[in-house]
Image 1 (cartoon, rainbow, N blue to C red):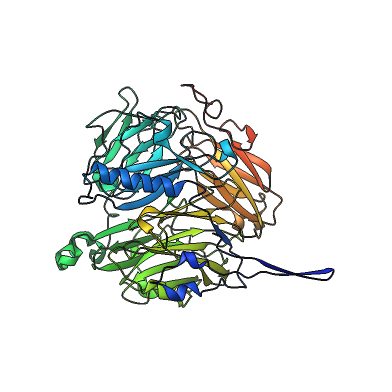
Image 2 (cartoon, one colour):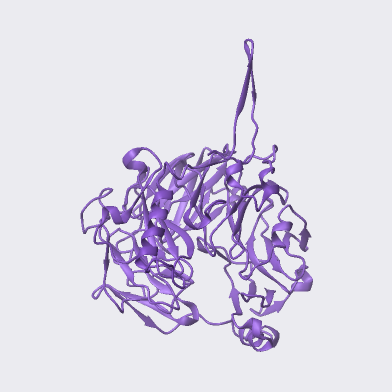
Length: 575
């Protein structure tokens, strides 16, 4: 069923094309009758098509999973017996297509849906269990599993994450299933790593778990071990008001039992980790500090903004910047094209967008405001993504425990319009990726407006692109072949006037490509700064192309697998 319908009327020799964009009635249940009448804004550019989940087999796979789990649990679901939780993905078989990973918060664990686009030339999926009969139990998650190459063989492995259960970490067997090391090979109590990077400079990727410690990978034993934390709770020398905020708020009231205050110099995103750019709230070139604090189930929400002075001290600046203290920031970045990062905050004061200027931040009402007022036990989540290539971020907004997700198109000047609404799973149902390998971002969403607990919605992006793009797959040395920890800089030229158009990104540990939207530029330059501090230039890359860029400066057109060839049964990775 398509998200939009087209009506073409023909009269005589002339053809008048009238396009009506309406939401399909099937997308909306009777619980949301007003949504069925909602039209896509005619001035907007975003268009999606809802993939047929019977044709792509996802409906049957999830329903079979549901039925077999119910039987396995004795005919009735036990506590946490069927609680679909998260959607994620990675290229399991190195064929260049993203495969999907569905995770539960409970007994069913996880499920891999292998993308058959290369094999069938159609977007369809097959349950990995059909291809790998001896597949071990795949982990669920408190949040989502992480995928990265543990052992440097060029195949992405699975890190199960939880501070409650003991999920295993599993080794990819060159695209033919996974190897379990057995009970005890777990990362517990790690549930949300801050970063995945080579911490001890041995080449292999480790996990930074913040105050819970670090987990080092040991290639000799193919295992991880936990060590002392390298992260500090907060920068030293802060004013007393900003010290020990987690403990202070927990002591205030019972609803703050889950309260956590986090101190950011690099602001995080839900899907891609921390930003590569320092927070600079007043454009003086000094890194500033954002303190974001919140508690699930009705606890406090706070946001503190501290400017760094020339003595290296952080000074509170909420009043100076015009930002509320009782609202937690959930997004930091430019939304209106003025190269100044803006803020989205959620809390007891005015939730919403605060646009940046040279004199501070100013609240701006938007079409998102009604969504911000819908409260539930978990904090709202904002996923920035440029769906239409116009170089400003559109947003997928998710209310986890209220189980709703909405998409908003960025119209420019800090204005938005809602273009999509759907029911969704409980916690982490949003996954943004190029699922059909056509160069733009699609939305994969756990849930559906009918039978949400056993359905997956794949919204194919059919928007007309407003500018050019460039997609790259960075490659580094064995064992960190996917170049995790590398910083990628894109710029038009070395000319001073082009420096403000420089774009930064981080190489992704899960092997996904990086796509830059480059406007009208026909060619651009890339510089990659690798973990060993070497910088490699790649000049004159053509627009609307995909490249694999190697550490030694080699440029290969298109996607090239991290192994000798896609699907290669080799222990040796590409150099």
